[in-house]
Length: 364
Ligand SMILES: Cc1ncc(COP(=O)(O)O)c(C=O)c1O
Image (tube, rainbow, N blue to C red):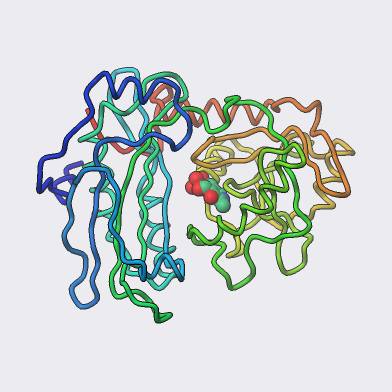
């Protein structure tokens, strides 16, 4: 703590009154309402990072020639601030997000933000907007740090100016139905990322590319899309916004290895750590779509779940594609899946001891 001073308030910010805030936080939908403040910093070639400030959340004025609007030089992160029963507010492993933000920046030829600036922007916004951190169960303040090439110039080259912003949104459960099984559509038509591409970076283009296949998923009664690898079209990669794991009948867990085409999830790493500590064998390896479908049919694969910051752990009850439609087990959340969901959310909400030092204090 103590890094918030890196983002000073240079001008007064008008804040919503308690009534307007309560109204905004009544029916929390993911990512629709925003708090009073945002953090900003600018990087300029030859100068470095400068003009850090805590300012009012509000519209940006951009030149129509802004790099990111044309060539998508853009990266982002997603993490949450959780309110504990005693009123204190904590982030979950934000240093991991800071490091991934730096890796994403390198891949997109952008300036890396120092870890302490990244953490400072989180502290500044959450401390200023602490009343926006909800306390109803399974709700939190979603934090969205992002940076984009803001130079107004139509040449295809790395932007000489980068704008960093952090905005915050009070959120309820990611899936309106809360914790419960979802249906996944495995697309055979589209891929998310190719070897040598930007799959391991958290950059908007990956998500733009996932929208059409996600529509395909919706049209087939599924909530998320699952991608196979672009090189062979046989290996399981990840969902549009979550990593994937399988629980086998010998009690072990398997998850696709980090090939450079999938995102290295903070939740994925946390789940693998908890499993290994519980003495559960974990394999990060290639998993073919045939192994997955045959294994679900034969009972060799007992549980399938997705993991990511937005929904933490999501049981997968059904997998469908143009050539199969199968139910995982009895279609209900598996025992290990539910145990992991409870374990992780208990740590995040301060109900279980944080033996790893994963919680980062934001507001006492
Ligand atoms: C494509 C993709 N994979 C995986 C994840 C899970 O990452 P994390 O656990 O860090 O949220 C996300 C979400 O951020 C994602 O967008």
